[in-house]
Image (tube, helix red, strand yellow):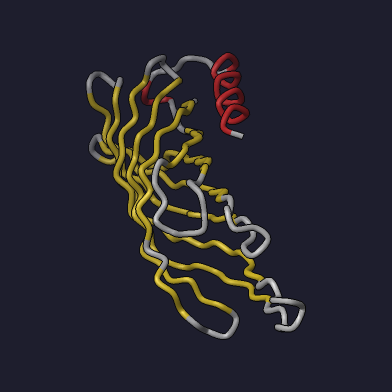
Length: 185
């Protein structure tokens, strides 16, 4: 999956034309997280798309949507997770537009299923749908290696709770350290 995302991003750069920094309104990036505090899930892969809404005194204000895919390593008990993270971004260009630093705040939502395995076919099978809701904050930077191709590094902090159908709440706070590649056009 990581190789497919990398290939799509690299092919997109061949068709995106170079523009001045002020003309770049859209960014799309793919990231891989090297950390994940929530067990039994592996490190997530995310794709982010953002649109520059306003330039306010040299600070770009954007809105974006990040989609996460998180694979479970405890199947069949846990299903894979899909998460959405709409967010607002403030960024500042540095080094003659070769680098940008940014911060974002947003909302996090995911859903997944939990299912017990019956012991000796005696215990009843329990199936639960769980969802996670909460806030996010990110700090990161982009370095442009070409006018429209950049490397992205960020730390995303998720402040959330996972809630089951019977209203049992579990702490789902998480810290993701991510590296990725993206295009701006």
